[in-house]
Length: 97
Image (cartoon, rainbow, N blue to C red; front, side, top):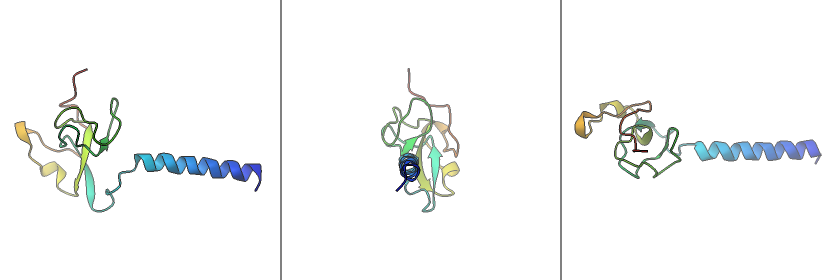
């Protein structure tokens, strides 16, 4: 194996590892990301600055955190206080700095 081939293999493995870290496992199985519906600590992953990944939401219904839900149900979810689910990140219900 040449030095160039070995470098390409290592780069490919690193790229695959990074892609796997940000993948959402069940999304392809008829589910969609629904922002602003997860309870504190029950989100599936992160969506923006100040977040990392699963289980890290700081407040109920945090707008920039998502939960995987059955496809087509997100925007019809009714939550306390007149909140609704969203297919895009929201700026509501953010944790206090």
